[in-house]
Length: 330
Image 1 (cartoon, rainbow, N blue to C red):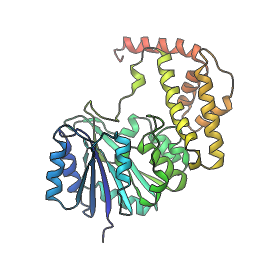
Image 2 (image 1 turned 90 degrees about the vertical axis):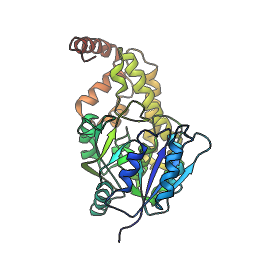
Image 3 (image 1 turned 120 degrees about the horizontal axis):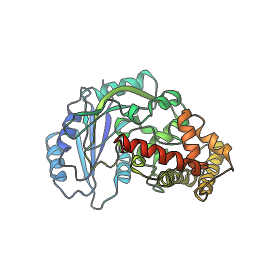
């Protein structure tokens, strides 16, 4: 008999694509699910659509928030409602292929994993393919393959897309409350990190989600730094992201083993220091190396220049920007 899986769907003003997503979940080959939906005080027709579905399918439970929680705290609310031994996360605007739940659960069992996540097909609002592989486009697949069974998978940055995730209820007490220290550490980042620190993760290269990009996504494929015309803008973003990440870690250091507690503090101090350096930094390169040593050579060198040698970086960035502009790629 199939074990029950709680599917957690967070909604907010999602009327345009919501029916298609809910239908794709209800029409899965894996039938023993409980679809738990929390609406974050929508102002469109989302609530009416949700009540309609709740009335016609007993597998659905709907919660209506009276105040806007934000998507991270809305998912935290849903995590607190999990009753089954397994749960999955869902966005409101994607489409799940009919075998998604079945294949994800099968992978978790076969690999004796505590969390499974997968690749996605990135599509436009009409479900036309934009990028066949989200992992390839975001340059994540190499790192995932190398670090899948270590904490490094989700430590420096997030490699897990929440809507592909299936995990075990037993880790929820360690996951919640989800930190709200920084907008750069969201629910799937934190869930993936905590499980990787305490259990085993597995990855599916198969794509069982059409990951819809339509201009109003809370999280998506937009590479913000590609829009910048100056290296200092890129550097400011990169440093702020890492300050948010390691600030969150230090604030929640009790969740980490002792050796990582020390690294968290050193990393936060390092990024606070380089933030004040405008042209060169020659201190604590060993901390940078410890954090980035498992990345690709190009990623390592690029970020090293941005963080520690921005004077040289500005020259290289300006040349690159002009070339891309001539090629009409900027």
